[in-house]
Image (cartoon, rainbow, N blue to C red; front, top):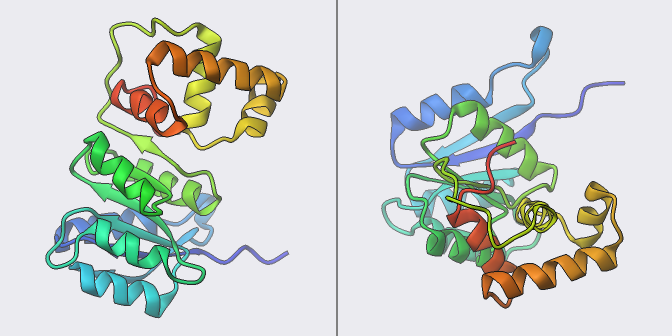
Length: 213
């Protein structure tokens, strides 16, 4: 069986040296000299060229910086969300504030990773987003002083949801019933004082509960 075609990626960032480093990491070959799983098909240094490259090349994944000259990452993500069959957007930024993350996810981004992560983590995030495993939240590693008020199982359910699993996926991962998942999520919302999955995920992100891998 022939190997699967590489994941086609457009990199949008206004720093040429950073683009070159990320491109080298993404296009590194697989084990045993196998072809690379990722092919960078275009680069862009500002928002307008990022949007044009994404529409011209129709990549699988757009690796998109938040702050660029001209249109920023948020505007690009919003514009692409209105297209037919848009690429999956993985946001790459030096900023790790949750309002930015939530705004980009609302605009259709599939995942988010910070620039301080090792290039290998960026490569893994691109492949994961392509597989449909996004909403990656990869903040600067930090841990809350305590996981209280959540129980161990509630913590597992919250982390699984923040990693992008739906109720069925969480149930399969933890080998529990979907109704049990719903009960755990209701308890999580009540204990954290939130009213939606988005707010609960923001809490997980802010407290460093979700990391690469």
